[in-house]
Length: 516
Image (tube, rainbow, N blue to C red):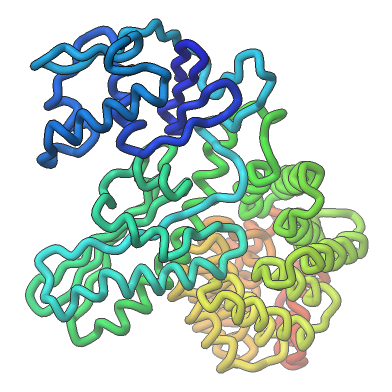
């Protein structure tokens, strides 16, 4: 809700005071005090309550409280003599005495100005990474409280979809890191990443917490521990872990919040994040819904590179999974949308990723490899980029590079939405090495992973058949027919155009034996 009094609007969720159409600039503590007084306007608020609400119970002088009260009064056009808004009850506390009415949150009254919803502020998500708080840690390790967040900031800055507050700004709030309102207001950050670093025994433990500043919710948290001697490895693991977690949880949270809003009010970024929510379900319906969301995002902002890359991704799925009666058109669209995304932002890893995958569809793995290498160079923590690079190496038969890329992808994102593909490519490579038993085991894992589509079930069918596991092969044959009744061996080889002739012959024979 938003409170209206006089010419003012006070929105606690957006942590903003406005007069007419203009926001009133206030120190965070001053604004926190005003919010607390208005929220409790039906009664007297004691000084102790104000200290607890604004200073989190830390010792403060009466002079500090009086100073903040003066600032509140100045902001709302009141003063100590008139006291028409805030009344001092000497020796006891303060009361908000002006008439305040509740209006819908984000209401712009008669000004006709549309403000972003407080539940979903709109625009590109932003994040502040704060120095980690040391807790009982040796002085020689305390520097990690600054070093690790600094490395996280550098890594996150490679993500083109996320605005990262500079270290010079976020580290200034070291002493008030627990005050989420203050941090989010001072830095205009939608998300805040904080941490605690401890040293129990001969180990180092880092607890991480990602908060949504608009809802005050913790949307992700984790704890990583390593021996003191492995501190360098721990630093690298934390950075990779955070990048992967944010790449997953922030878009999911953005999509969740956007769904509560009126679709007519959504901006380009909101449409984009809702599209991502459908993108990794790999069904015809969800792919079409994702495509529609990305189209709405482009309509809202024609310069939105990521939305064009999203359209490339959905067009790729239409061609790769044969979701359309005309895969050739989908193939051309996948390339065109990726080219447009790169025109708008050549440094976006996702745009380079979609460009690389478009060359799978035209059986040009060497060209694909160049684009995917560029994607992982731009973002060395890009799990899906390493998976796609491994897929490309599989097509040309480079086993060592395939397994290395898959291992990197799995390490970076063990719960990735493309995990079925990571296991499936490993199985396909093992078939090419004629390790049919190993291929069958990995193919079973791939086909039972959430999101696995009919082509993954076909890998499991072929691998189990070649391994002589005929009962299991029969199960996967039934699954393929259930997922795509008209699936053919041609679909398989269109998706996995490997250069290894011997394995193609073996797989084709097995698929024929299974009725494909």
